[in-house]
Length: 115
Length: 115
Image 1: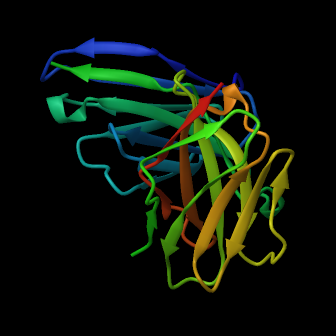
Image 2: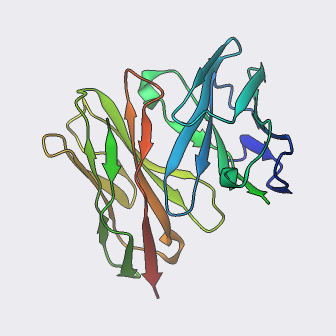
């Protein structure tokens, strides 16, 4: 969905490096999320944010941190990257209204490789 | 804990025919949302269809429909008149209506469409 963008699309880094993945959205949604996808698996929630001042840990937050700079921007950081953080990372947004069932709209993903 | 199971790792269908992808889930909650997402080789996660648990009527979106059996905790996706562009990984997902960090994906079903 072009309304949710992620940068970079691909990144190769080395163990111990600090990495930031960025997400921007023009959908006007309050809620934003970060997920990771490993080969052969579905998505797992890392962090989520319901507004600029509300950030919550997901299922697998260890080794990650986030920053919600504005309603439209949500960044994911790996303070010291390790090889098992090699994965496909997705940002998503959702609308709070029940009518939409809190449906999530995903960005194109960032493929991160940690050597 | 909620789990989502897709028992068919891979399926094939002839173009123009109908195929059904299976999904079961485990939950003790009464209110929740269910989704099917499509992930083509471009890796973009695309919403196919969604269902709210309190709605008894099965959701439909053009050639896509679901068979939602709440008591059996089953949520299958039927694709009619299959097209080559339907070839992708399909993920079933469960989302709690109360706890927003409870968003679980199945492991996916790879759908091949034969011309």
